[in-house]
Image (cartoon, helix red, strand yellow):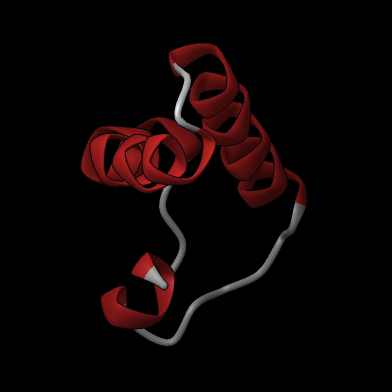
Length: 56
């Protein structure tokens, strides 16, 4: 299973931001963490087993 970055961001962007914000405690740092997360997703050309694996 492989989603486009845009589709992955639409589905999981809010969850990733929430998790990042709970750790970073500032919007700016959380935004950077979200950007890093989706950049890593984009650069790793990996297929995921299913949606549960992709969410993790």
